[in-house]
Image 1 (spheres, helix red, strand yellow):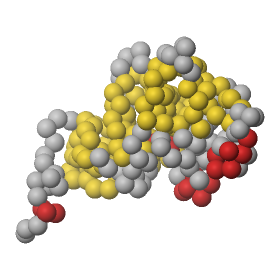
Image 2 (cartoon, helix red, strand yellow):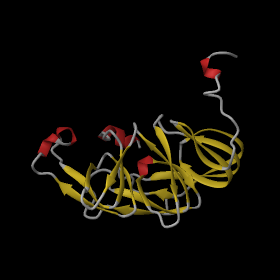
Image 3 (cartoon, helix red, strand yellow):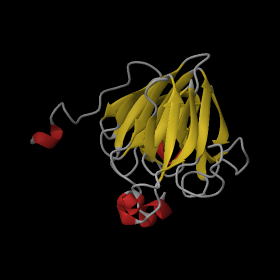
Image 4 (cartoon, one colour):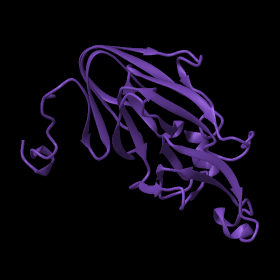
Length: 225
């Protein structure tokens, strides 16, 4: 068989090491030797002796109250083999979490992660039940976390002298050392958020990095995640 489709650019080679790697810009490969976790429905292909188990809805099995207020159900992948994960052809990235690190991420951006990582559900102080992206998962421990993002993410440095304000629908995550609160921009009113009149941003202060997607989530899109 000939043609660009069958060039070396697209043909998958055997994994060189266990664990998570970026297969290409739209897909993450995981060489499973034991157990890992992924969002349900994200597996696009696998080979080898793998079993998939739907996780329950408890804190240990669900990234609860993701951006839409819905849960992000997880599945455990166990055995020996390789699996590929993707979500709507979004861009894929791998974050390495080391002991002492803490990475807060919006549930809709989680694709898969090492079973060695721990996570808890956190809310933005003062956010209540309004706005998008206010329920987040905080990952700690040691391991890799696979993320997806619509478009190329913006990674904005945050310093004590220069806080960053992010639309609540556009925030992907942020590193340890940052505190968050809601900021209301009364002066610009309906100019923000597509003219909706809801001028609320997430303010991040401290020392670290904020990861932002270059688009907002529409209400119709949010219901699909």
